Structure formats: C-alpha cells, structure tokens
Length: 230
Image (cartoon, rainbow, N blue to C red; front, top):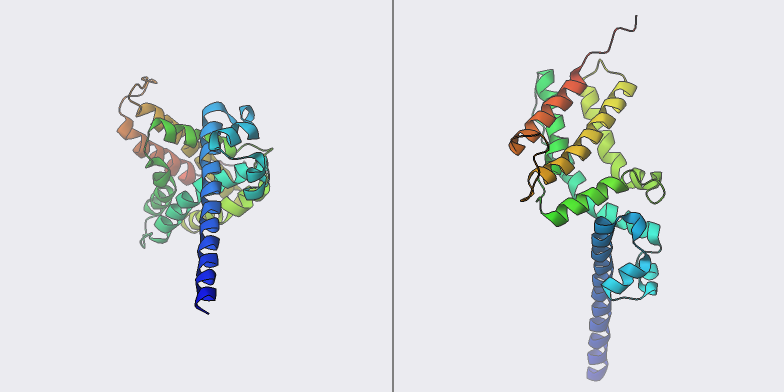
C-alpha cells in the first residue's frame, strides 16, 4: 500500500509538472510572438520565426494555440483584458454627480486614463503599437474577437454616456465613442514618443498636458450639440 501511495504521489506530481510546463510553454510562445510581431510587423513574422526564437517546434504552437490567427487573438486578449477591467472598475466607482459636464468627464477619464498610465519604455511602446494594429487588423482579428474582448466594456461605457447625455440618440453616441477610441489609440502612441529619452519635439511642448488636453477634447465631442437639421 505504501508503495502504491508513493507511486500515486509521483504520478500526481508529474501531472502538475506537465501542466505547469504546458502553461510556461504557452506563455513563452506568446511572449516571443508578441515581441517579434511588435518589432517587425505582423506580416513579416512567420510561425517558424516564433518557434525558433521560443525554442519550441511548430507542433507546440498548433497544440497550445491552434493557428496563426488564434495566436494573434491570444496576444490581443492577454493584453487587453487587464486594461478593460481597470476601465470598468473606474466606471463602477463613479460618484453621484448632478452636473452633466462632470458626469461626462468622469466617464471619459475612466476610459482614457488607464490607457495612458503604462510604462513608456521602448518595448512597451512597440507592444502598444502592435495591439493598436490588432484592433484594425481585419484578416487576423475578425469580429468575434471584438465581441469576445471589447463588446461588454464598450457597451457599459455607451450606457453610461447615454445616461449622462439622454439628448443624444444611439447613433450619435456610437459615432462619438468611435471618435474617442481613435483619439485614445493615437494619443497613447504619441505619449510614448513624447516620453522617450531620445524623443523628437513633434511640435508639442509639455508631455504632461497630453492627458488633460485629450480629456477636454473628448468631453467637448460628447457634449457638442447636434447640428440644426434644418
């Protein structure tokens, strides 16, 4: 019986080790793929480039992630989920505000500020650029990724804007949300450039003004009155 118990513990330990190794291998593949895609561009990296750098064979990618498209999806999900959770947490913490402008500003800040707080190292900037590209990379980031990763967060923000701005119809809210999304994507990349040690001027002075100016601009977009249709 003792021998059987020892063997049982040995099998269990081996199973845990395999499971941990499986997770480590998947993470290693994702880390390498993310870095290569960010540095070279999505179209310029092959699966063999990734396997060579990660020290695994091609079968490991197919086993852990399925295909090139699934690999891109996994990178996108892994990077976006913490950001989306932080946005929703700040949205849920919104105080009871009676002033419309204050409500809209709080909602905008909940969306904008988490995306503007990452460390602007060279690698983080490259990875951010990759994630921005994946949001519009239609071949390998089809609509199901948007539905799975972004839809819930976006819907909650649209609902919050709708409550704060009942005079805007659904189309107006949706368009203005898309404008905000585009501005934030551009501004996060611009922030990384402005804060780089060897940064160029880009015609902009104080980088610390970027977030306040961005928030003010987006608030203005949402609170702008509809043009007279007549």
